[in-house]
Structures are given as C-alpha cells and as structure tokens.
Length: 189
Image (tube, rainbow, N blue to C red; front, side):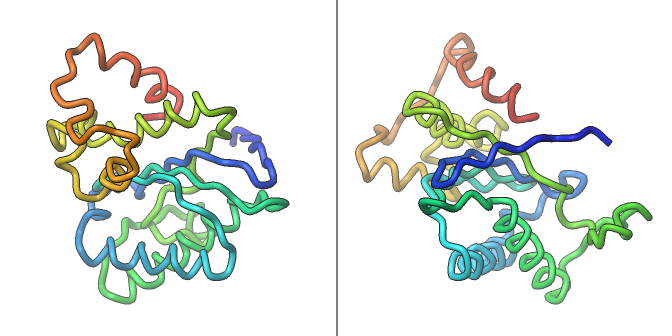
C-alpha cells in the first residue's frame, strides 16, 4: 500500500475531498444530508473547527476547514464524522456496498472510501483558488449550468458576503474553465 504523508499545521486551513464508497450517489438525498449535518455538528461540539466553504455532490464533498490555534488533528475529525454518519445511515436503513475482507478487517462498512484527500492552503491566493473550485464543482460535473443553481453549496453564503456576484461563472467558455483543471487534477477527480 502506498504511504501517504499528511501535513499537519496547527491552526491551519485545509481543503478536503471525501468520497462515497464506489462513488455511490446518495449524499444529496434529504435523509443523508440531515445525517451528515448532525455528524458534523457532533464532531464540532467535541473538536471545534470552522467551515469556510463546502459543496455536497451526490457522490463526494469538498470542504475547507480552519482548525483552532494549536490543533492540527483533522484526521480524527474526519474519523468521527464518517463513523457517526455511517452508524446513523445504516441504522436508518441506508445501504452500503459489500466490503472486501480487507475492509472488514479495518472495520469499514462500505459507505465511504477509505481515507480522504487533503491539501494545506498556503496563502490567500491558494484559498481563493480552492474556494472557486468548490463553488464551480457542480457545474464541472454537469449538475447545473451556474453555481447559484446548486442548493448544497456555501456559494450562496459567499454571495451574501460579497465575495461572488450571484451569476459568477455562468456561461464560462471552455478556455476559461481550464483554470479549474489544475485543481481538479490535484484532487483526484
């Protein structure tokens, strides 16, 4: 198994990609959204963090978190969120894929892909690029024509903050979309 080194920066800001097992498309279902919201709330009560941005798609999510000063343990937070969601999802009758023997040994339930992808944000420019990537993602995946059309995104909050115009990235020409390809290639999409 390849060894993945994570960079832990106390109080840092991080971009994450978390994917469902075998890219099953259930995260935008009303019940799944509510269970995920509760899992995140429970985790934040135990281990605080700030969510700067998030987009929820049917088979994955992207988010940016900032951790408290002196704290770098985002892995434990994802463990809590995934385990809490999985337990509630399966208890409520949600389905899972049949896990392999190796995944069963690791106590995986066939709801999430193992692990997650993370990127430490280096500066304001890096943050802005990843905010754009998150908010453009539903368009990139062909789910909507404009970011404002996707209901499960922090885009609407950032419009209220004045960071984006409501019609931002609507009708981009193919050449303009290439700026999102750099990040897409680095997050494994």
